Image (tube, rainbow, N blue to C red; front, side):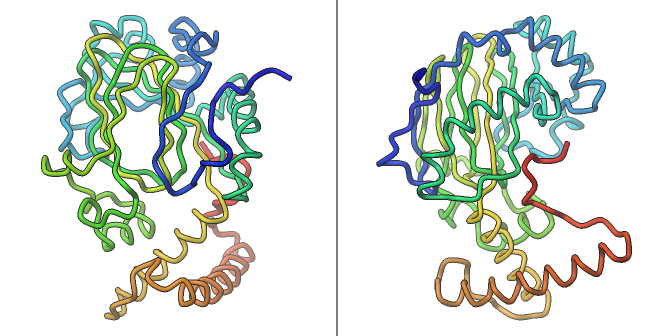
Length: 301
């Protein structure tokens, strides 16, 4: 049996704790710049490229960065001259590409036995490849998925924050994010740096970030390539539903207990919300309307 390509301690893995990891993917042929240029062509045709210039800062709105700081070059031009491109680029949802979906599956299948012991129900698999010019910054934000982020080329400083740190991201911001996928209340403050877990990443190193871990990235002095392997689990989907329920209660003028404050109440609330959601989705299906399904094997592109 070949050795695992991402090294995670099975006994010490905690799905809700930020932790460092090591990996053996830096030389993988699909993660070299020539292969990524070809992937960039295919992803651009699928409209699965996100990019902005290196003028973005930690405090730039993550949602608005591509419009506030436009990168006028296309994916191929940016990737082909990333050292001089003065840009940040993400190849989104690379599981949409059959070649890269195989890589996503290989790695997550390796990790799954360790993950399932503590955090079963892996679904909504996805991959994201980030290619950055020297000095480029990924603005402060958070995401829904659990995330293994691995450095392939170059160096960067990854700032991460505990997903339960309500000084950094408030309970109301969590509700808005889960309910409307809005990061409007996820805003940067320089004071947050002292509360961060910091990883200085170079090839062979990476980090694990639980769902909704706020993070921000500062690229080093050379071009960078990074890949993220992401997924949902039963726990992330349950947590999302609880926050969406609390958001609805707040719109009714109520003041719901924070998620996690009472596990007993959370279980009861989740049972009610799950039943209501299933019934509502059944009606929407019967009417031919779209529904949000976050238990699919892969994230939709």
